[in-house]
Amino acid sequence: LNISFVTKKKLGNSVMRNRIKRRLRNIMYAALKKCDINLKYSYLFIAKKNVFDDKYRLIKDNIFKDIGKIIWINLLIIQ
Image (cartoon, rainbow, N blue to C red):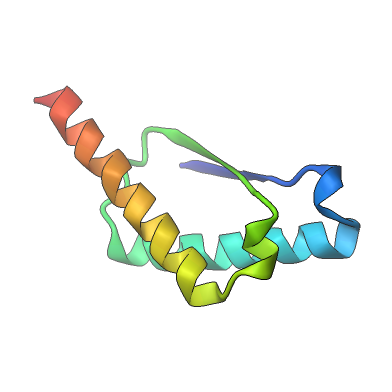
């Protein structure tokens, strides 16, 4: 399993970019425990400005919803 997070320099200084990556990493740890993520794939998350500004719960809900879509699409492809 390879999960990568990308934060561009235009999002802010290194402190802001690292905070965004820590938030995303923390959410992914929770997602790995709750969702049945296929470990054969690599996942790339590209952070946007709202990840820094929005509340943690809102970001977490959006990521879980997106992961659910990915899992659902993978199930359709396999069958």
